[in-house]
Length: 380
Ligand code: 13P
Image 1 (cartoon, rainbow, N blue to C red):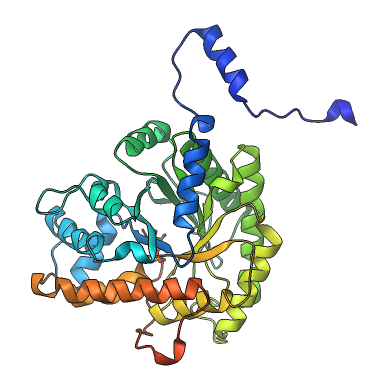
Image 2: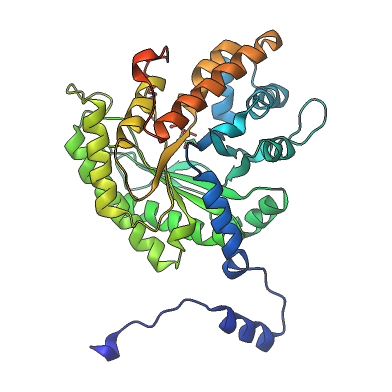
């Protein structure tokens, strides 16, 4: 019935000008002011053969990783390790953006050059993790919710001024602990509010509802939960008037749980993941930038390569942390004499995945590490 139809609540630039004039107040810039830039940012990150270097581990997580190779978790050691990553020669050949933790966004090389300038100089756009991490969800069977909406608009404005051009918010869905309706709705609502706020501050939001690898479930169960999660996420993105052609998605690949006895081939994982994406994600979304989630360096590249064997509507690529950094970190292990060797490994990992983005990874002639990196209840 027409009388029951909901009116669109999207605020047009004209409505905004009228509102501002009526209230006679200065308001912050909004999404209309950033429309062109958001598109430019998304296009840059989704250039052929490119992906994202995720290096946004919180201080606690980065500390655990550093301590695993015998390096103390100090601000200076985090800075030294991140300097190695951002100053890797030719990083921009296969990397369009790097996600940073807040501390890193404001850090510089030991010679005093801001990391933001180093990245921009290499053609890599700086991004920023803006969520404040996971907390236990009450009345649940051990599920989590993601904090960080309070003050987010103000923080995003500051990050933009500091040079960030895109953002990340990671919420998680656990299959063995749920997934309950309330966890799924909270995850989708948080991501949508965050995405709308980012776009109004000039940051392209990466929307990341990670389906954790934890569990004994098979690939069909992952498919079902991933399909529900993305359906819910898009409902809320629409409610928040998020511009779908100016976001990036960061899904988990659709595979079996880490403890499922039945393992699947790369082709099966790629087919299930693409079937899920095709049924849920509008072609207007420019980029699907997968997380590695505990997959081995080799599997994350093989699965991506398998997904790019035939055309699909999006740029299907990577936004890996562990699957890009693992061997790099072990090789470096805090030793300045190993920086160049570790950087070469990083460049080769970005190249392998850049080739996989094009469907041209040479799986026959690779020495990429195939050790799994799954960690139960991984925090970020
Ligand atoms: P992993 O590739 O280690 O799962 O990292 C995911 C992530 O969200 C990093 O930004």
